[in-house]
Length: 147
Image 1: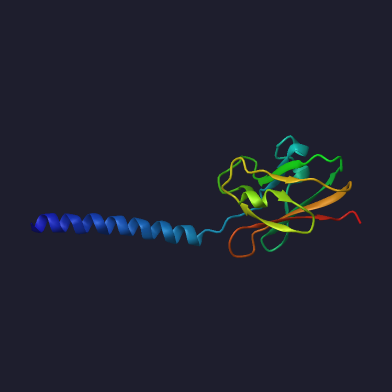
Image 2: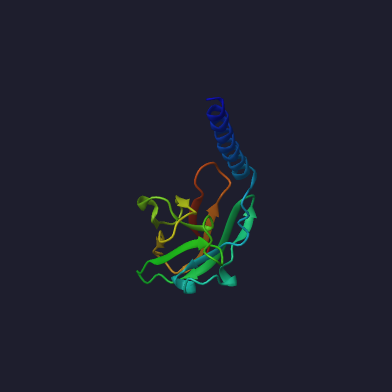
């Protein structure tokens, strides 16, 4: 009876210690988003240096791109060069899929096929931003900066 109790305690202790270590590790590591790109139909989904994101303030990244307003949506997302899990940011909810200028929507960086859509109403230079600085999901926004 004593052997069974000791073995049970040893097993439980090892399980709990493993969980505690994983929790602590996940909270102590901060992701580095310096390797993200704006990827979409305009770049043939490649990690093109022309669309590499730049950190504009603490944990806020953006890049600018010229788009033509031809009535067709541009599909895009933010991802690193390897489509790494945790670095592959698309829409968080179906309601966040379509983005309009001046509004922000939520992002999920564990996505695979959840591409955003943006249809510019006028041709111009647009700034695409992803903001990791707040609590919760990152926020994505687009601004027309050609004015």
